[in-house]
Length: 295
Image (cartoon, rainbow, N blue to C red; front, side, top):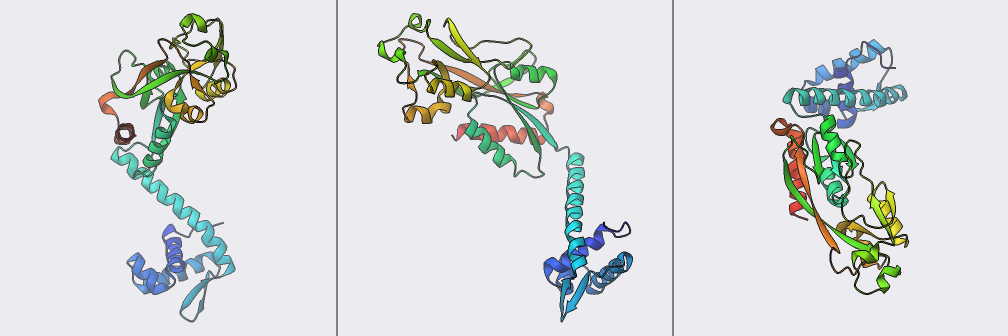
């Protein structure tokens, strides 16, 4: 355990001596005199009653006890640095955390790449990501559990901007009987099983697309729907960006519908707090816009 009388500055001095490989180098790094550095270490050893360093010529080396204590001190110094950074972050108005709510239809690769870039922003901001379907984003806005939202629905009282137009394609496995009938109408679909994704909202659940099939399987996410359809369990309208590989590999094939084979849905970018959105939220929004524009 680090002795309570030892200060962070003293531990920082010891760390500098080891990392910089000497007293003189540590003094230059810390912008202090060499005598001040030597005094700080002598005082630290005296307070702890433990020898931390031994000298081999002009080179300082940690004792066994010194190595153990410095390892723990590094953790404390890192925690202290993060605490100071957090205080500066709060003082500057930069958010420490953002609640990002994204409709599942948004391209996953774009989202992950954007979050990767945002993770390098300074000062760092944590992101709480929640992926929802249809009115799930609306619920998050009304419940106050969101800072930034990507949604196909712009609820009353909020302003949204067009972000990305997502295309949905009616597909089934190439061996599905629907591919044996030539051109299809909606009537041909009625007796087959349709896979649909459940609205994750609870206030006012909505349906999207054609739901005329007598038999429906309702799943909770797009990946499950893709998996079921590639295993010949039915048909459904899936985001084109999410099934590129399955189409290329011949696991899925567009249904030959005479109309309605493809439909489009606009996803909107919504600031939950309007013009008062913080700088980190605005930065993340800008990154999302750029990711969509350059895809």
